[in-house]
Amino acid sequence: MKTAAFLALLLIGNCAAAAEPYPDASPAQIGALQNGIEHGCLNAGKRKGGDPAHVTAVCKCVIQVLKSDVTPDEWNKAVYLAMRHQNEESNAVILSHSGKMATCRTSH
Image 1 (cartoon, one colour):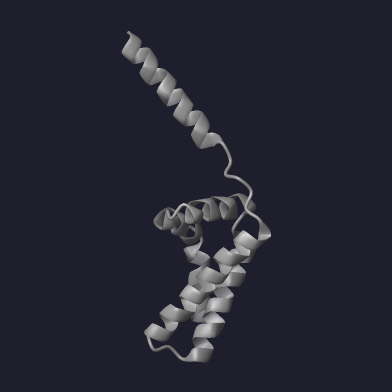
Image 2 (image 1 turned 90 degrees about the vertical axis):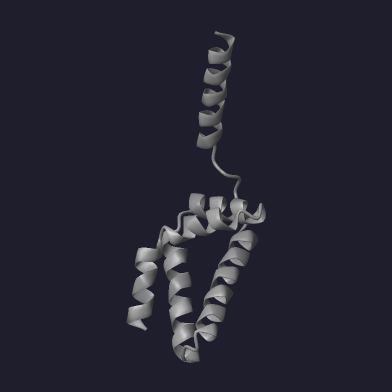
């Protein structure tokens, strides 16, 4: 019985912790993450041999999509995870908007 009670408390505690918001990221932290995303995009385009003007236009479009679509809570989460070197998790937050970002490749 003690084990069941302990597991119940553990589960309740984990649910409460999961519901807590991530700490607010500063504008500088969000800007640094956005710059990192843009530079990563530019470097990937260069490695693939893309036309520099096209690559720049696509990457700027991607950043504009993110700036308009990613919520403040999502930026907070992405920054928090990135600062803890949980890059896959941080990327997953941003990539949840990949559908709209995909239009950048075809429209530029």
